[in-house]
Length: 312
Image 1 (spheres, rainbow, N blue to C red):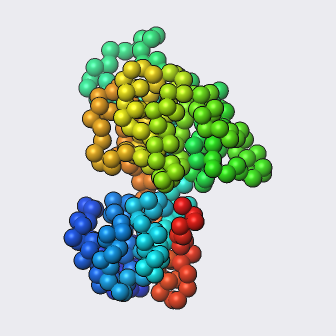
Image 2 (image 1 turned 120 degrees about the horizontal axis):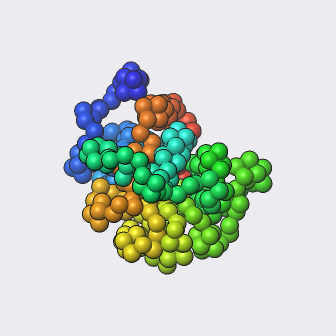
């Protein structure tokens, strides 16, 4: 539907499949295009932007995160960057709760036993997990998604806490019933579950490093649906293997598809293939935002979802 509408409005060259574009294909695309519509798997760095033709004036990203795009270099070349904020909020927040439940209630372990045909009936100590009602949830990054997670967590009876680079306005903080922690270290030491919902920027790279992970309780669980680079994955693996953390639920990874093989061997880890925003409704809404950004730009106006370096 989105591709059909794009083709009706513009002279469009579309990809025939879902595989990431090669570097050579991206170079060829930007040398004679007016607008490039990349996804998170397309690295639009300074070197690539340097090979752009004079016609390229807009990079309309299909997705909210733009850490794969060198926004500063694009801006210096007179190329605008837009994204699609807000459309994946509810879908990603749903997945956060799914991962929290998956890890704490050992759902993948139960599923594996059933699929293998090895279940021998109920037992009083089989597959014992933890109750999430009454537990403390620490949200790292209280933007749209973090707030959506907070609303869901409260419905599950969790106590919501958060750390953010800026404290929420009092009315927003009250609406999500969340307690603000200025010190991330102090928050981490007191949480039962930590959900990573902040973007990847130079300031958040390895924000959860070995030192900070070691502040967490051995009974705590960490969930990440944002960007893998926020967590020091090697330190996380060491602590999970040593029993210094109770579990992890991950939808994103520090090295993209190159997932640490040790993570796959741990029974206390739930791994998903970056599917937090993967709903049909969400993909259509993302595409519709791309269309609006491109059409507004083509009409001589600033795209409504333009990204500027100060936002990052």
